[in-house]
Image 1 (cartoon, rainbow, N blue to C red):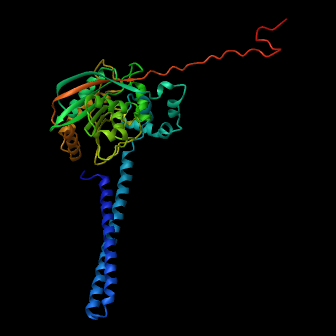
Image 2: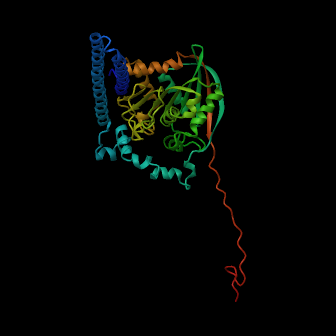
Image 3: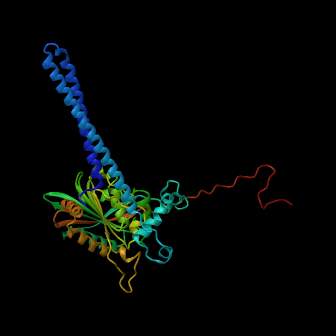
Length: 414
């Protein structure tokens, strides 16, 4: 592939600007004609020649302008046709009945298809799923404030490659206690930062913002409590306003990482340059312009398709689908499936970094441009803790005294 579809629209926009410039030239030529007319009778022959020359030039400019209008319209029509074709190609294959009922874990395309079919149901502001999250009967499902505490800080030799960053994330996830990692790199004399956000940590206390409930906050509430906590962790680690940041996340952590890319408060303070996700359902999240992202997915991993959305394909956003067959080792708990395994994605990241594909080379260069070549770096771990569920106090009202002539229940007279 030598271009992105968005470049067609940029090209059409450039043509529109040229058309406007030619309109201005035509108007200027008309004004020149008006200025020449009073001198026509002073020198009739030369005056006519001058007027004719200007009129002919204006006519030729108009022809070019009209041709550019037609070219611009054709480019936009081409973009529309390409987008429609891409949308049809992106539709997942309809699973057979046996595939939907017997296969576990489901594939990415199967979950994408099923979630896409339910998309209006669970994303609508009036949908049942949203209603469950907002229900007063389930206050534990709604986001609660998240505090940040520094638990460890050290200086280490860090390999900032995509693959090793995902392996660091895997070790962080194994702690299962809501910790994130903030790494400070010295990139050509300037500080740059990497934030590692783990995926879902089931079985942890309800104060862990990355538990099962955290999926609802990430997908349903744009990480409204986790994003400010990440910003607070960066500040505590020493990051200053305007510093460049890379965010890396697996599964639920990838959704939180992508939510950073559209949070205006976070972006007004830090210069988020890149987001790397692995096995994360982030198709419905669009980063602000200028933020690059790379999304690793596996055909055997149903989680990336869980939101029913396909990642956009733009100059700054690249999705890599891994197709190698993977199996869980004998006797090992497969969890949500072997395709979701973080080492599987780390191995895929190594292939990405070694690829000569133009879009991948440009994406990995953008990543490396922020974190540099690595070496000695300051590594700080922070524990994020969600506030406990508020206790619903119940008020017991004293019984009203009986009115005259009445008796309390159970105390009737004989």
